[in-house]
Image 1 (tube, rainbow over the protein chains, first blue to last red):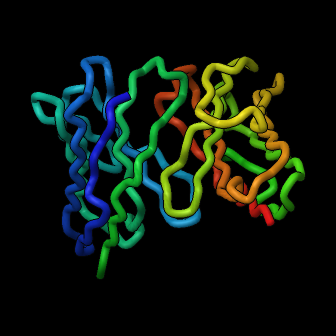
Image 2 (cartoon, one colour):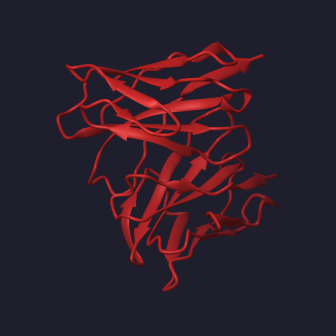
Length: 111
Length: 113
C-alpha cells in the first residue's frame, strides 16, 4: 500500500470548515483513499473513502486531485466534538482488512 | 444496535504471562480484525479473520495468535508477555470480506509490568 503524508497537527475554529490535507504521491490505480478519525480514548471511526471522484456523506467531503497524488478531507462546520486524530490511509480493496495507519493529524477545534 | 464490544476494558499482567482478549462484532458482520496501538502511534494491523479463517497477518511474532468462532466473535491470545506488549488492543468488524469500512470497538488497554 502506498504511504501517506499528513501534517502532525492543525487548529480550526468552531463553526468553520476544516480542510485536512494528505499527500499520497505513490498511489496506484487500484488504491482507494480512506479517512478515519480517533477521538481520545475511543476506537477509530470510519469517515469516508474514494477512488478518484469526489465523495460526500453526512460527516465530510473528500476531494481527490485529478492526478490522485493528494486529497483533502473537508469537515464543513467543525464542532468541538470533531477534535480528534485524523488518519488518511491508502489501500487496495482486496487487502483483507489491513488498514495501515500512520501518525495522522491531530485536529483541535477551538471555541 | 450494539456496536463492536470488547472485554475486558483494562488488564494488568506481568512479564511472561499469557492474556486472552475477546471481541464481539456487530451483528451480521463476519470479518474481524485486530490492531495494536502503542501510546502516541497509530494502530498497527495484527490479524484479520473472515468466516473463521485467517485472511491476513501483520508483522507480529508467533506469540500472537487469534481465532474466530462460529458466531463470528474472536479471541486474541498473546503468550510470554513483554513490557513492549503494553498497548491498546482494538478489534474491528466489517460486513464485507475486504474490510472496506471497519467499525472499531473501544479497545482493551493492556499493561504489562
